[in-house]
Image (tube, rainbow, N blue to C red; front, side, top):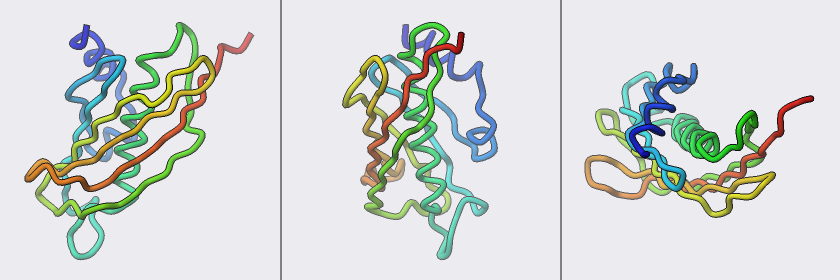
Length: 138
């Protein structure tokens, strides 16, 4: 089932995720993993991943996790996102987002995303995100 869900995410590319270079590497209803290679265009000075790029990675992973849990015909949008920046992710490294549910309800879902550095596994960011579940318009 996880291969099927990963294929679902890969077959529906998101424009910003593509522009940033985000790829999904694992997907189930209870965990999504996405990666973002840190390149010069995504950095602030001195050559570390920009906070906005880190937040975009987390938002993309949280939204993808919600999509995998939506009832047929429903859509989602981010209601709220809170980020704690813990450590820098330097150019040449890869930021890895691992998203897990805190709450999966009928009208909202809350996800925790841990961003780690591929080079040493150090926690770089912690994001708590709320997603609205929207029913189809009649």
